[in-house]
Image 1: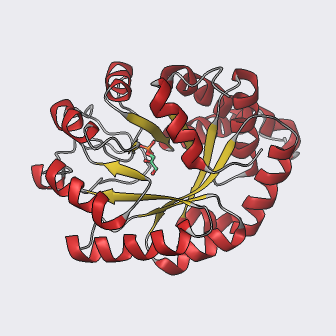
Image 2 (image 1 turned 180 degrees about the vertical axis):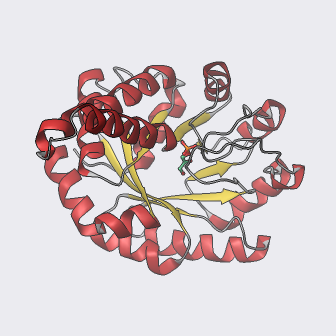
Length: 284
Ligand code: 13P
C-alpha cells in the first residue's frame, strides 16, 4: 500500500535501520523492487529524479505504483528525488507522490531556505513528506572511470544544519558526508564525526549515493542516524549489463517478455542485498 514516507522514516529511526529508496525509470525496475520488498517484508521507497519522472510521466508512475501497491500489505512511499523547483514538486504532488525532495543545495544558503520553506508550506498541508538538502552531493548516477575528491566546503555543516532545519521545518535532511552519486574508481570515505554531530538534530537523515559505499560504512552510518539510503547506479548497472548479456546470447530474440524477466531478476537481487544491508527486512 502507498503510504506517507514520514511514517517509514520515524519507525526506522526508532528501531535503528534504514529504508531503501530505489530510483526507477522502467516498469521492470518498479516490479523488481516491489517483488523484493514483498519477499523480504520490507518497507521501501520508490523514487524518480526529475528526468526519470519526465521519461515515465508522473501520473503513470503513480498509477503503476498504486495499482501494484494496493495488492500487497507492504508499505511503499513514492518520492520525487532531487526536485529543483516548486513547479516540479507541485507536479509530483498533484500526480499523487507521497513525498518530495527539494534540492536547493546549489543555491546560496538563504535561497535554499526560501525554496525549501516554500515547498514545506505547500506540501505539509497535504500531508506530503519533505526532504531538504544542505551541503553538496556531487556526481551523477553512472559508472565513472575517474577518482573523485570532495571539497570540505561541500560537506554539511552541523551548526548550519541546525539553523536550516529550524528555519524550514523539513521532515528529513539529505546530508553530504563524502558520499557521491554514481560509482567511481575510488571508494567514498564518509565523515562519521560529522554524522555524529548531525545525529544530535534528532531528525531522520538521508544518505544519497548509496551505490559503491562499502557495507561497513553503510552500517556505521545507519548506527549514527541515517534512516533512508538512496540507490540508483547499482540498479542501472544490473539492468543494462544483464540486458547486454541476454541480447548478445540471443541475437535473434525480439520478444521483450522473453528476455526482460532476467533484467527484473537482476534488479531484484540488488534490491534484496540492499534491504538486508540496511536492516529493513521484516520491518513491514
Ligand atoms: P547512486 O546512483 O550512487 O546509487 O545514488 C542514488 C541517489 O542518491 C539518488 O538521489
